[in-house]
Image 1 (tube, rainbow, N blue to C red):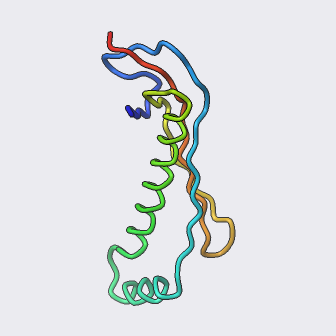
Image 2 (cartoon, helix red, strand yellow):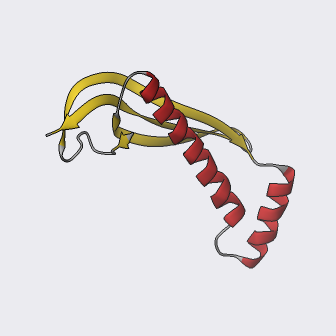
Length: 106
């Protein structure tokens, strides 16, 4: 699956637009994760426990988006974006979305 944040793919032409695709995941921090994060905050710097959680959530949303596009017959996604919203304290929704397309080499 070719994924682009722009609305075209260099070296390809879009031959069919298939519509919006998305991948959504909802993640929460565990009690252990919160404790480890609080411990890391004592020393300052990057909070790797939260970086890893955010990266896993984005990857899961991305993979679900690609799966959704593939099921619809797409071989590429253009205009891909991420969005995140806190649903409640400690619970975050991560959304990956874009436009599913069929492309072919120029």
